[in-house]
Structure formats: C-alpha cells, structure tokens
Length: 133
Image (tube, rainbow, N blue to C red; front, side, top):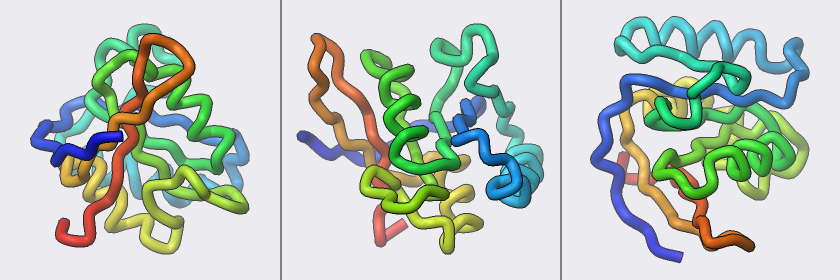
C-alpha cells in the first residue's frame, strides 16, 4: 500500500449510505448544506455516471457500505472517504463523532489517499484523514 497526499479539488461527490436513513438524516442535511456552500454537486450511488464524474465518494455507513463503495470505485482514481455509522468501522476514514470536520475534509479534498490492492487488476483508493489537516 502506498500513501500519497491528495491535491485534488472536489466539484462532485458521490454519496453512499447504508440505507438506514433515520441514522444518517442529520448528517445528510449537513452534507447538503456544506456542499452547497463549497459549490460541490452531490451525486447519489444510483446516479448514472456517478462513477465517472465523482471526485470523491463519501460513505455514511459501516464496513458493508464502505466495501460496496470500494467495489464500485475499484479501478478508478476516486477515493472512498468513509464516515462510520456502523458498529465496527474498521474501514472508516473517521468516526461519526467527527462528522462536521470530516465532511469539511472530504468536500475540500484535504485527506491522504492510500492505494489498496484488490483481487483484480484494479486497485482501490481509500481516503485517510490526516491529523495535520
């Protein structure tokens, strides 16, 4: 695995959730507000072309939702930035206690990217929140 700082600008962000809307509703509202303030267009996991258009994929869910997003974006340069709304959060970039700051980092591209090997010719880009951000 290699780590490289992100220097990307974010104009479009795909959003994946674990589909337990009662748990993520408030965060989705925060995400919409911050995205609007930053001029970032939000795409849902169901949007046609999101895989080709997104600059970052923001996951609000647990490891299952994160794995779905990683599978969807494998072989692209789109990093997966995961906010843990599950139980374990082994693959999460940050925990939900840090949601506001995490959304700021994701929408402004201030995170490091770790290339993770996959069981295919494609690799997966996972966003890692840096303590220096």
